[in-house]
Image: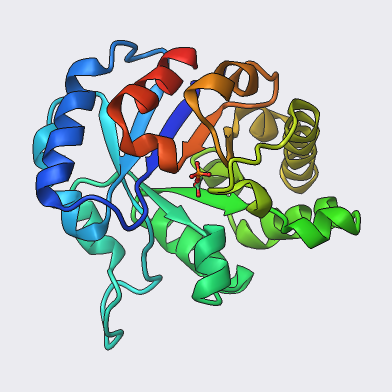
Length: 250
Ligand code: PGA
């Protein structure tokens, strides 16, 4: 049985004061601990504030990015050690915005995944095709490759700690949600890729989230799909009532 996981990716939104407000509201409003895991990913500068507010609550903290090295001359980067210190449990890696605007490669993303596991942090590994890939019927190849490369050199015992987030790039922030059929068949495909790479036991344990314009009004349908184990929510995670409605639907 896979516990579903709803994660809010706040992206570059909400300062410390706004973070205290939203995290405080979520703390009061989250009524389903145990049934659904809730995670929020504020910007780096707000992580400390969120950690204080969410102390002793079932809501976990994620960072939106990490550098693969523990320390060194990497101006502007954040070490996984710092994230552990702040109380993070998860880290989002390979988000399409990182791949597109910061040219992150599968190999670099894989280095991050390995580092996180070594530090006992859980990666939320994002994968997803662009619109032209889908139009040219290359979406399975692209997503399959991103999954395989992202989990390269990972031990099977570590694989179940990784959450995969399938986010078709054309559905992120566009209001254009993938159809239930497109979502479920891709999630099934990803599970098959994990099964081939590891085994069916591991594949059955890995949680696969959907992300891309998840809103209160489409959440129940998406989260009810057999191969969907939660959602990675962007825009709708910035509004308490919307995010909680998605958690409730889950
Ligand atoms: P969205 O973003 O929900 O605003 O489409 C999802 C994401 O980028 O993780």
